[in-house]
Image (cartoon, rainbow, N blue to C red):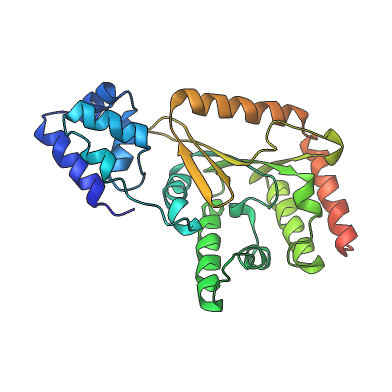
Length: 264
């Protein structure tokens, strides 16, 4: 989002002689949320904007001039991407696709080629580069700590073809065996599980409260309400309790890769 909105909020807060924490208390928000809005990293909800207007006595200005999202992944995911880069602990779940930070180039290229209207080759290349840049957080051997839940359906869907899937699944196996990532599979035999409605990312930070991100068709939302984040953490934990243990999950990843044609 443009930082004009965030800058205007900061100016109004300072003119009222309020700290971020004081404004957060008056608007029933978290200080970190105020900080992210002022920095241009988050767009407040309509309800947040209404409470900010009330706290700052600004009529309906903040409510009326909320930045408009244009519906593209790059825009609504931008705040989430920045939080992902700051996190010290990440827990991921994706129902239909491998989570973004674990994707190989060929797999990412296939995923990013399914949009409508279609992207140009140049535009798709830019999105692939951005996705691979996200994965560089795994270059540090320790931080962030990453756990992922993989729905078996995502492993069995041949995104990009058999060779691309073999490469993708073995990439995850290597990350697990190097102890860089923990991975658990939610088997198809489980049937219904608590995370079937959407993808979910959970983040913990050194200097701010936890946050979460959920995504569906053409929509994504960062959650930083403590009650909502706690509920989403509980949903993730429920699903994790139904998942296959990690060594069995790795064996399943290898077996599916072999079905795709991997013979090692």
